[in-house]
Every structure is written in C-alpha cells, then in structure tokens.
Image (cartoon, rainbow, N blue to C red; front, side, top):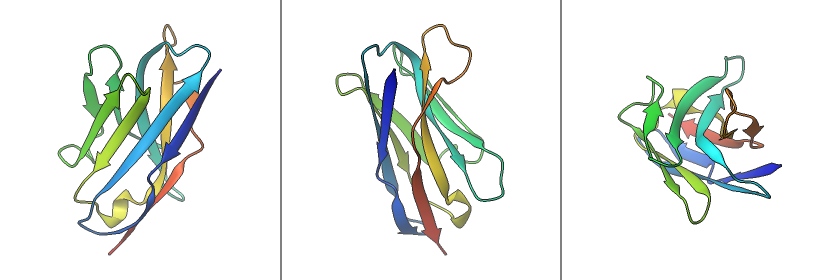
Length: 119
C-alpha cells in the first residue's frame, strides 16, 4: 500500500502562486511516475502533469503549460507542483497520483487539496 499526503492548497488571488506538495509513503515505493490531476465542480477530471521518477521527465496538460512546474525529491519521496500566474479557472481540488511499476494507470490517489483562486 502507498499513502499520498498532499499539502499546500489554499486561497490565492489571480496572478499569484502556490506550491503543492505530495509525500508518498508505504512499504513498497516503486513508481514509474507521479503526477497531479484536478477536478472543479461539475467538470471532468483533468490531467495537470506528471514526472517520471527515474529520469525526471515531465508532461503537462495544455491548460497549464508554461505556468505550472512539477518536480520531485527522490530522497523525500515527494512531488511538488509549483503553480504560477494562477487564474480563476485553475480553482479545483488537486489530486496527487502514483503509478506503481508495471501498472498502466495511476493506482494510488491522494485525498485532494483545494485550490481557490479569487479574481
């Protein structure tokens, strides 16, 4: 089992920044990649971005490219999401995800952290 604990959400004005963190723990932490999804009320779940654990390669959803940056700390088993130039449409619950080695989909999800962006 893997536990994911997110932190760093909150309220920010449009144009501001926030950094989310997600710490992974558990008996077996072998991951291909970790990342973030988000979901706003009444909207589909949206891929935000991911990072491979070994090479640190990143991918981003189109709506956040150029504004959000994902990084990881292998020693701390933590992934970060630096969000800059936030817009009201970025407001959502952000979920950290973990893909175990050999799994086709993300098999562990965090509890979510709320990000609110005021106009």
